[in-house]
Amino acid sequence: MKDFIRTLTYILFLTSILYGCKPAQKKASGISKEKKSFVMPEIPATIVEDSGKNIYLAENFWSNFQFTDSLHSVNEAGSYFDSYINLLHQISPEDANSAVNNLMNMAGKHSVHMYRMFLDLADKSLYNPNSQICDDELYRPFLENALHYKKLDFATRERLSYRYKINSRNRIGHQATDFKFVTIEGKTNSLYKLHSQYVLIYFNNPGCHECKVMCNQLKTSVQVAKLVDMGVLKILSLYPDDEIAEWKKNSNEIPHNWINAHDKFGKIKQNDIYDLKAIPTIYLLDSKKRVLLKDASFDMLAKYLDNICNRL
Image (cartoon, rainbow, N blue to C red):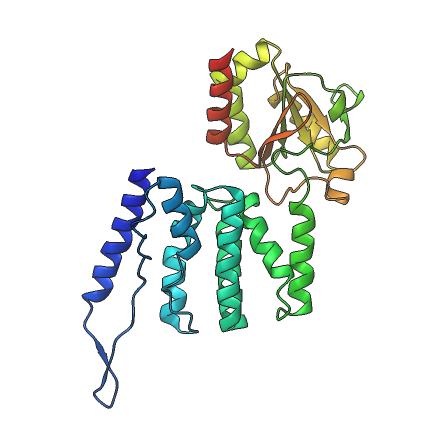
């Protein structure tokens, strides 16, 4: 934890030096115009615990930021936003929510443009499935704040309201939504009828390159093989679309000890039961079908399964 704070402070310090070393720009009148650089808030000496330091930094991260509609401010915000998100990961969800609300309220008081800029940064970092730090739970307080910000136009509010509805489903720590499926053998079953200590839902498409990569990673994983062989883990490979002939043609790619199925009833996508903004998508559930991992990368899954193996 101390290393994280020191590293973050050091990076911002170096960036501050780089900004400060640039020659002052001159207007036509010959008067120099100096741009203020991002400065980290100074942690009070009375805060000695690492957890308290992280909370203070998150809550006050943007306190010295120049909330202006200039290109300099836009670029500067983009440069530091991911560091801010990484800091939010170091604190509790409640403290992270408070820090996000503090940021968005400051931005909203300045202008709608500034508010939308930070909202767009959150979209790119936390909502975009291709982002390395995509995180539904950290994206949630941005959505909640935006739904109470009255200056956004109607279309934007409707779009964010829909995202919030999807975001609220199948959250980590909550019970996953049940659904029916039909296996490659033609048998009808449902998620809740799968009895196992852990269930892995692997949403995929047969023609998807990333799905093939993920499938190969799962098939060659020592942890996955061990847990499946022990009966501790069941894998449900689920095709959520309707090109059944293509799905059947590629059925031999799915191991025999996985459940190979498709959403014959079309409910998952039709009713947005699960957030499938990207394929493949992985959910890991416990025996009570509570979500442990949501839209997880293979590395995240492997680390989690490794911990399970070590406990057995």
